[in-house]
Structure formats: C-alpha cells, structure tokens
Length: 282
Image 1 (cartoon, rainbow, N blue to C red):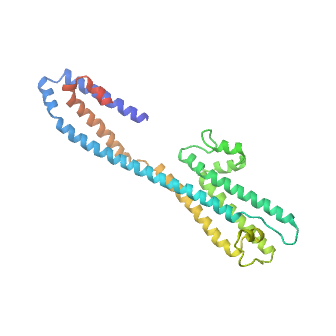
Image 2 (image 1 turned 90 degrees about the vertical axis):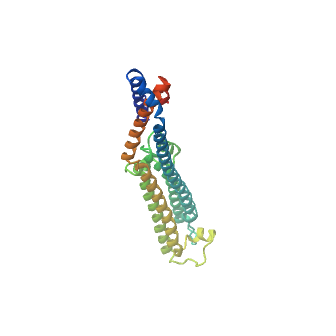
Image 3 (image 1 turned 45 degrees about the vertical axis):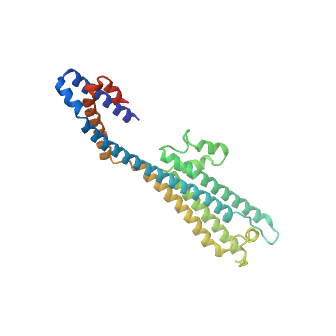
C-alpha cells in the first residue's frame, strides 16, 4: 500500500511539473502541437490497458490456484478425520471377562483419536498462520483459543510452533499417532494368539476383535495418501505465497506508468490547464 501511494504521489508531482512547464514555458505553437498529438497517447494507453489486463489475469490465476489447493486441503482434512473415526475408533474387548486391560486400552485409544482429531483441526489454522507470516500462538491467530477450549495443551502448542513449519509438524504428529495405534493393534493380536475371524469386517466385530491384520496395510496406505495430500497442498500454497511477480516486470510496469502519465500531462495540459494533475492523480 505504501508503494502504491508513493507511486500516485510521484505521478501527481510529475504531472504538476509537466503542466507548469507547458503553461508557463512552452509557447502557444508548442501547446498546439502537443494538443494535436493525442493519437500517440491513445496508442500508449491501449498498450497500458493490455499490460494491466495481463497482470490482472496472472493475479487471478494465482488466486484461483491457491483457492483450489486450499479447498483440497479442507477436503483431505475432513476425509482424514473420517478415516480416523472409522479405523481408529472402537474399543477392545477381552473374552476372558477381565475388563481391566480392555478399559485401559479403550481409554488410550480414545485419547489417541481425540489427539488425532485435534491436530486435524489445528493443521489448517497452522497453515493460515504460516502463510500470513504469523505464529500460531499470536493473538491474531487461533492458538490461544485452542488452549482456552482445551483442544491443545501448552506442551502440544510448544511442539508445533517450535519449528519453522508448524503444518509439517502437525502432519508428523498425525503420522506418529497412526503408527502408534497400529503397533498397539499388533500387540493385541499377538496377545490373542493371532486368532481373528477372517470375516470380521463389521463395526461390531471390529469393536470386539480390533481391526483384522489383513486390513492394516490398506488402512495405513489410505491414511498415508491423505497425509501426503495435505503436505502437497500446503507446499503448493507456500510456493504461491513465496513466489512474487518478477521484479523486472514490476519495475517495467511502474516505469511505464510514470512515463505514460508524464506524456499524458504534456498532451492534456494545453486544453485542461490545471485540472490535468487532478485527473492524473485520480
């Protein structure tokens, strides 16, 4: 914004100088010649319009690409949370009637799922904070609200913001939770002697026996694909945010705009007098 205001002030000042030069220094014959050369200004104006349209299309393409990536990120986060509820949910049941181990495992499993879902929610907000150049625990971001509602603890938030790329930290935490859950599943099946019915694919069977070992690879692959999708989406948004317009193109546009309005002031001054700087500034 400062650069835009500065550019407007420069154009206005140059227009004032050019107008004063034409009205006070140039003879009447020169003023007539400048007034009649408006066709060249029209050609330059058409080229400027084309350049501005090209720049606008480029900016809109960048915005649409970022919006598409953000939509994919939202969809992947929702799908990952749904997979966690479907695959990591359920409770262990011990057939020998001793529910102590089962209750302890069910509580650990519930804590893992809650932690997993919490980091699924935190991930998009961490992406937003990084893209805006802020920290997740800044007052303008959602970190303090996560602490207030108990979704994150101080240690959880500290782990996330301690690194330069908090979204990637969230992805690694999600990945560790997934592998920790499946390691516990393997220990359960090993404790049961690996006896799991081959047809236990219903929700009730999964609650009783846990996820069959034959489904582990497929579940891991499905959730890993969603994590990879989140990583790629954030990487694309980060690339768009860090890739500015080429400095040579920006310098050319600013120089051309100044040159165009300077010539416009020289051409308009004989007929519009001191209204020329006002119109140029507007």
